[in-house]
Image 1: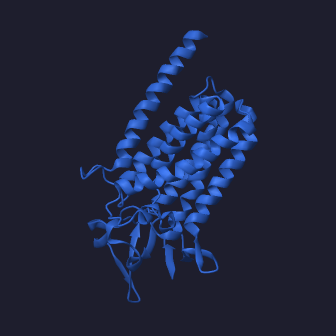
Image 2: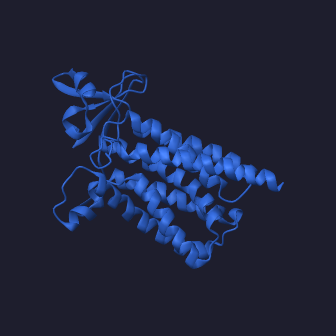
Image 3: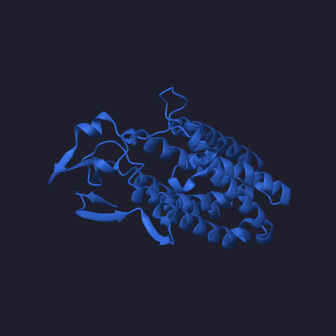
Length: 285
């Protein structure tokens, strides 16, 4: 089934299918294709730039492999832990092809398990994290477009230039709030909702942050600086974008979006580290 997605302010209209192609009876979804493509570009970047960060490419192979695999597993488990759905079997929990990956879970898992693997392979940790931060922005910026094909990860009602209009029937009720429902649009007997394309906002934010960090890396003063800039920049963007979304994962029934809470923590920790490390660096010089 195709999804009609319109951007009336821009005069654009797309008929989208969730399925990119099929192999026998198995459908391959655009959601997975976008994530895989972003991941591949991030890996290519990391291996081409590793010597610039003082990292041996051969030693990095094991680290990347462990970080990627366990990062994806962490993204799924984070989503399952926070999502308001019931999972009847372990196979439902592991059904990544059905959607449901949380970026923050992937970031946490990749840094934790990739960091442990780096210790094992004797790869310098902070330079690795500086490099990986750039790769993350590439993967996240491209991977977010999987939400476009799935018609998900959008925000509340808007009539702005970038407003996105999609069929109401194709959207899960859990993704809607009263404001969106009060502004439903009916055309030719078909009901639509008009919302913020927050997936697009986040993709653009990530790619702009990537361009800034690529420019800034020549002025890097100490190992780990790029990591803290990434966490600060991404945290600020995600905190703002999450405030627009209608499908947040809620922190254990508190009503507080978990991604917003985590973003605030990242902002405070990253800003504190940048200020403190900057001060220490100036003292040494």
